[in-house]
Amino acid sequence: MAALIPSASATGSGTMTLAGPSTNSNQTITIPDTTGTMMVSGNMPAFSAGPNATQSISAGTWTKMQYNTEEFDTNSNYDASTNYRFTPTVAGYYQINGCAESTANSASGYFLVAVYKNGSAFKYGQNYKSDTSSGPSASIATLVYFNGSTDYVELYAIGSNAWTRGNNLLASYFQASMVRSA
Image 1 (cartoon, helix red, strand yellow):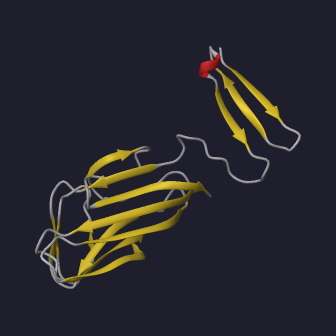
Image 2 (cartoon, one colour):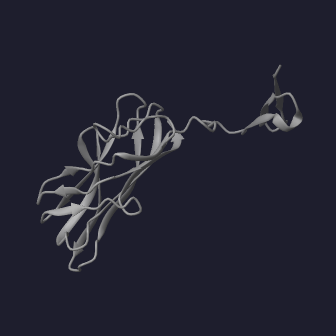
Image 3 (cartoon, rainbow, N blue to C red):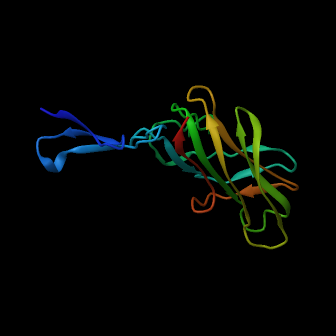
């Protein structure tokens, strides 16, 4: 049977050890002597998804990126089949990353990506102007606060001309990872 063993130091920090059947299986959490929130591994939602097909983007129209191939989803908070959105169930601050790569020769003029929070534009990414025949990409990285129940984010893209988002998982992706709790 496992035992919970607390210990404290004179400075106010401490540890909490869950003693397993052998000393090699003990699990210890170190508690700092400062006030704040302590994160425990396994309680930090994260996901990474990308497309399995190309997607047409109309000129001048914000279009939700349909990233329907999950690389991982640690807490089942990403909807890869219907809404293509991340709705974490743990309140806190999250790093959001997104990228959309156009297929070669499909993007001319400008195009960019944006993180939408709760259905509205939250942060805009890079505004890329393409005059080349290669497949340029637009990206975004931002921190977002989530309430842990109803807040969600989606990735959108737009262009001055119609273009096609590629299906390369190396260059088109949508990701999030919890940085710290609320």
